[in-house]
Image 1: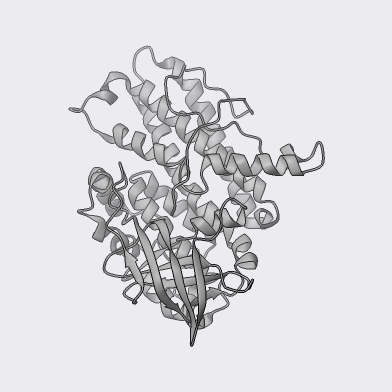
Image 2: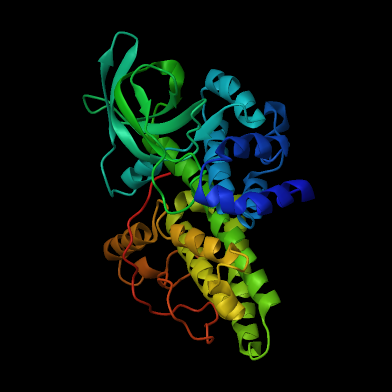
Length: 398
């Protein structure tokens, strides 16, 4: 899936991609040239066939080398997935070819929409009637894969007079749409992450991904989150593989915890694949939320095991810096929208609203809240539910 040459470039470029944007312009074209954006896209629409799981595994493979490149990949592939589910054939035919070819960037600016769907916040973009559509006002505070030389971003828009919200494609270069400078992030700095200001942007019916956000978003949420979970899968696989290789004298005690976390990772990954294949997550989003939480927890535990296995070497600047980078990358996993805090809140609200005895056990897994990274003992538990302190984090956008 990931050719040796592409893997080598990602590994050699990972530090630069994390700390600055000097290679940001290369990521999308390279991933496109590798054929990765077409995985899971029907052949008749220019892809390589397969299903969304092929996209998940591709993003996971990239995340194992560079989370920055994988996050960019996720933004592109998530926007492509929106087009695959859109009834707007003209829009799909217009944008799929340049997105698959990597000549244009796609941004899944639906974090606000997903929080709106969960009752967490109001939509950040509003509309007023115009002669040929609507004029938009608002902002997207955080959006990834906004390449300065051209992008199209998905966003949910609240229409006036109580009309149903829509999902729209916002195209760079149009009057009323402004991209900020890159956000000053502590990591992932080559991900072309910025904010969008919207002031009088004209939205025409031809730019609608779907005319009913309330019907569309629940259908695309499983792919949106499933592809996002690939970030955790790839990062955890890489950290656990490094921990397994790094064990030296006196570190045999880590073998069982590494094995247990790999088993937890494999179990969560298998459940994610099954749920995406049979469509259960459309009607059972809580099951998907729990898997997202489970994978986020495994990432944190995997990084602690990698640190313990590497010992003092991981803290030296004169040693390979891959651990320090992965530590920063892992810190992003709990806060990417929907964040761990938001998901825990959504599950808590569901449990309160559900009949007694049913709310807390819906879905296929119960998981502990993600543990903030800190000192840990080697005695990492198997994937059984354990009470842990809830993290204090806020979600980023996407």
